Image (tube, rainbow, N blue to C red; front, side, top):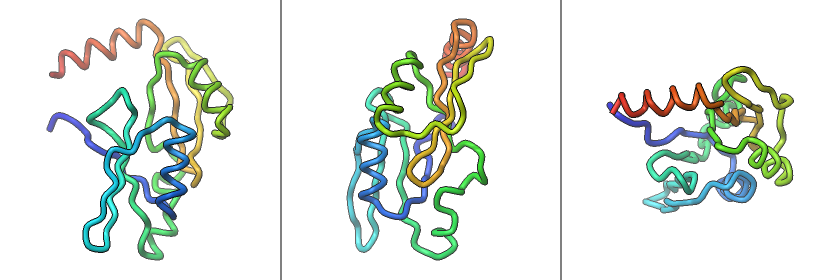
Length: 142
């Protein structure tokens, strides 16, 4: 194994989910196709072409019950930024709800936000030492 391709997020409605992730978070749609009765919607950050989110419409009552609660209140993903202030302000101005006040420690600045269904994500800017470690460990893992 060498990469993760997609995180799967259960959604109630494709159009409302696409609108949120595209217009509020800045993702782009790079797959939106239908085969038979199935629709495939994949989103990604413009700077990260190989990793993204696969929106999957909940089709059973068990899946619908899990929309917004797939990780039992824990974050679905961590999203890294090189400019926390800029992205925090941009997301806030776009109406994204941060559930915990922004925080900083010796290694990072971070804030928790939710999508339109309540799935939690963490926005993180690694500070120099942690960022250097992250980038060097990525290179050595290749």
